Image (cartoon, rainbow, N blue to C red; front, side, top):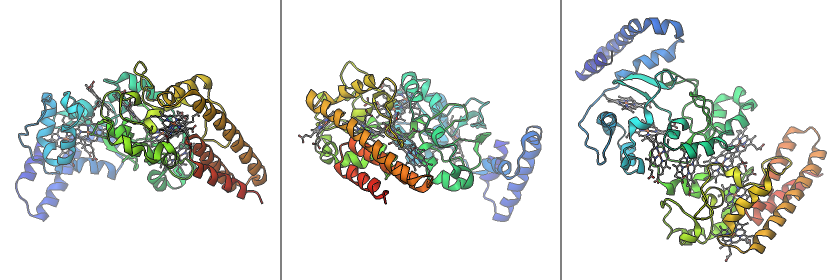
Length: 403
Ligand code: HEC
Ligand code: HEC
Ligand code: HEC
Ligand code: HEC
Ligand code: HEC
Ligand code: HEC
Ligand code: HEC
Ligand code: HEC
């Protein structure tokens, strides 16, 4: 079927004939696949998927600047002239230099709903689930899978917006938190694609998406480590981690020493680089010392659950706090660190108190309760990230909820 479609497209056709050709193709394909389609046909979505091979296919003999598998070199013969910039990006990546190409990441299990079977002799998938990455990066996968990042869709799946206004849910919450990906024979259904949020539910049952922080084809560590990467999600009134860090002494002149730091080096700990002030990954992800390991679960170093109406300590919070403090020790003496945490603890409890007082007055007013929760989160994140500005704004908001 694929050959027919390619040949019919190679001869230049007048428009009218093209439409007829397209319709007859769909008809032929329908007959061809009728047993399979008869069971699952669900209208226009299927007609769309059948029309797909009609796109013009140009094959070239592409010579890559890197050594690839035979399968990947066949992908490149078609895709290098189609997605030119994508291929250029990939060719500069560490993956390309290590023989990890299109086929190695996009090959599919033919039984998976994400699989596009019969793709010029291959089974390929558009989405690349964390389980695909896990085949080569099992440690990072295990750590990520245990994080609240992987659960970010579970947090919002019962939000009324998801059923009342799916389009709005997809354009906002899902972009950061992820959505449940639905596919059939390699085609996304029900507007669940694009879907690059951090807690995406994949068709193989796994949770999460590595490409929420790592580029789709640019795998540079500099990109993953950039505060702008975290800032895509961690900003805004109800969780201003990025803005608070920026406003703190850690963030204001961070760029002065960052400019001379090689953020692509394999292991980055402050003592081994010119970096003098930390950004997000230094405290939350990177190893604190040469003999330590990085984590893909930023919750491992948190002693509080700040994003809540009333904050409580996390499980085994003392151990978690020590892991975070190892990072501070690269630059600070004990007194600064201990006193920081005493003040943070006191501030968190004060925000709990202010939120409780305001919540009692708000009674069952949902909107007021949401405002109060948002302000309490903002204040605690502001205090944790050392922004006097965000902490003050949150206090004012909470005070203003009192009549
Ligand atoms: C004979 C040409 C050809 C070969 C070989 C080929 N592809 Fe494709 N591929 C296409 C065309 C044409 C499309 C249609 C989508 C487009 O480019 O807009 C496509 C689509 C795809 C898509 C889906 C994109 C989307 O947005 O739905 C993926 C993923 C993909 N190819 C991966 C691969 C991989 C991996 C290989 C190698 C194992 C490969 N392809 C080999 C021509 C080819
Ligand atoms: C390290 C794994 C990896 C490699 C290697 C890789 N891809 Fe991808 N590709 C991804 C990820 C991740 C995405 C984003 C999909 C997602 O969110 O699951 C993606 C997305 C895509 C898309 C859809 C992009 C869009 O915006 O329309 C195409 C097409 C594609 N890849 C083709 C290729 C081709 C061609 C190659 C070889 C040059 C290649 N990929 C190599 C991981 C990879
Ligand atoms: C077929 C095996 C394979 C797959 C699949 C794979 N990788 Fe890799 N990855 C590698 C290899 C090999 C390296 C280079 C390791 C090294 O230099 O020590 C690497 C390196 C990396 C790096 C470090 C890059 C750098 O510049 O140092 C990141 C980040 C990464 N991979 C993320 C991913 C993500 C995310 C996925 C899934 C979308 C993925 N990988 C899929 C094999 C793979
Ligand atoms: C710009 C990215 C982004 C968007 C858009 C987004 N969120 Fe979030 N959300 C986050 C981040 C980041 C956190 C974690 C905040 C923290 O820990 O400081 C979070 C936390 C949450 C939490 C847990 C904390 C709490 O307030 O109870 C809920 C619930 C939530 N979001 C719901 C939603 C809903 C519903 C939407 C859509 C209306 C949405 N989010 C849109 C990034 C986003
Ligand atoms: C929250 C953002 C984020 C997500 C999501 C994420 N990574 Fe990473 N990743 C990073 C950062 C930041 C680094 C650099 C760590 C460091 O400095 O030591 C990194 C480093 C890596 C490396 C290089 C080796 C190492 O551990 O330092 C690999 C491989 C990798 N990630 C794979 C993955 C895989 C596989 C997934 C999905 C299961 C994933 N990452 C999800 C942010 C992320
Ligand atoms: C100096 C180290 C440091 C830097 C830099 C830093 N953080 Fe934090 N972050 C902390 C500490 C300490 C806490 C509170 C820890 C606790 O609960 O014990 C925290 C808390 C958080 C929380 C709240 C989690 C919750 O409980 O809901 C988020 C989200 C967060 N940081 C994200 C970021 C982002 C994004 C950046 C970069 C823009 C960043 N952090 C920069 C140290 C840092
Ligand atoms: C694509 C969006 C996205 C990106 C990018 C992202 N995060 Fe998150 N992050 C979230 C969401 C959503 C949550 C809340 C998850 C939940 O509780 O449901 C979260 C939670 C967290 C938490 C609280 C963890 C816990 O266990 O309570 C920390 C700390 C954090 N992120 C740090 C980071 C850092 C550092 C980066 C950059 C390296 C980053 N995040 C990148 C969306 C994102
Ligand atoms: C890479 C080095 C580095 C790391 C890691 C680091 N800091 Fe800092 N911190 C600094 C520098 C530099 C300053 C500003 C002092 C100056 O201007 O000379 C600072 C300032 C501070 C201040 C004073 C804030 C103010 O507004 O006066 C506190 C408190 C602080 N850091 C706590 C921490 C804690 C807690 C951690 C770990 C969670 C940490 N720092 C991690 C380098 C670091």
